[in-house]
Length: 303
Image (tube, rainbow, N blue to C red; front, side, top):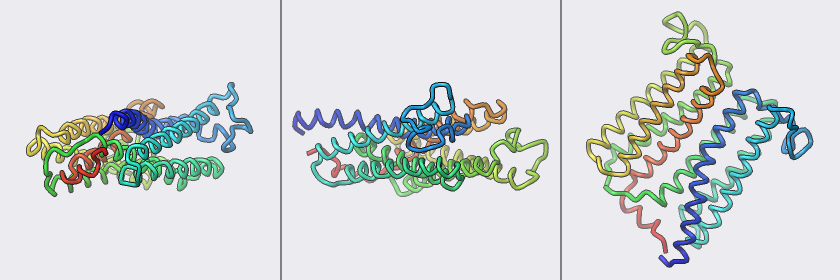
């Protein structure tokens, strides 16, 4: 690789890291906006009360405007990383396609965010909005993982299956939590690990809540399974190191969910829960990339 391309790659990696940061920060900011009741802080879109800046005496408007501004910055970062990926590769390949798709999705998800506001926070559209954000996070994680994580072993199909299953459980856990909240079932269980003073839930809202908890237990099971297999068969690989971080963050995310009823549904505990869930999701994607076939590595070498 020429010195010129090395400099371009350094800048590319900086923007790629920023892309991953905003992939985490944007859903976190969105969670904070939701739990503070600021989702309709700006009743119009893309302006806020007809202005490009929020009224400084309205904290809800400032929070909602900050969430939108973060999304705009994310878009600018995505444009930058896409430009530098083309400057390096000078053609469409998996890397440039990933970042092109991410940029397109950022624009679409931003538009969906506007529809959320104009539709009075419709639950179905909010679910679509979150799903889009998670796909963007997966794309950003995939892009930088392909660039920085070089396969060190020929991983077997078993570990690949476990990695994919873990990612699926992570995604389903997050979306089931979103569904639970938007069905007004987030606060119906005021104890942990049981829902209430009774052994079994008493009505449908409590069942929705408990199903989310049960799914999260399935995720924890797979976190331990993938770590057991990585440490036993591939102990010195990058995949094993990512797996340990995956386990730590995943367990933290699980117990942060327990903190929500135990702290009486505070803003910080609810925001922390989704924040850690987003990181867990991104790590689950990184695990899949880290156990890919060794031969795939060659197509990402710099020219």
